[in-house]
Image (tube, rainbow, N blue to C red):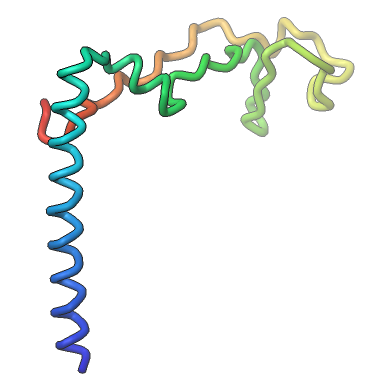
Length: 104
């Protein structure tokens, strides 16, 4: 019974993979036909949201950060901001991977 179930699961996985490949092929054709850019696709899917405000202050004991906006956090209460200021710029986010399967 388990062997049959495993076989059925394999068949379902193969069928899904074929359907996904067909959908991606169709999408690629439509995107090319309409001249849609990667940026437009990312924006439509909600992946290109504006980045949050960079942290300006860092608490080394807890790892908490604060952007300097809003109410001052408790871990900074009664302390000098200069002592917790982040001097180095934050590293940039990694570049997005290619947006089509198999693309390099």
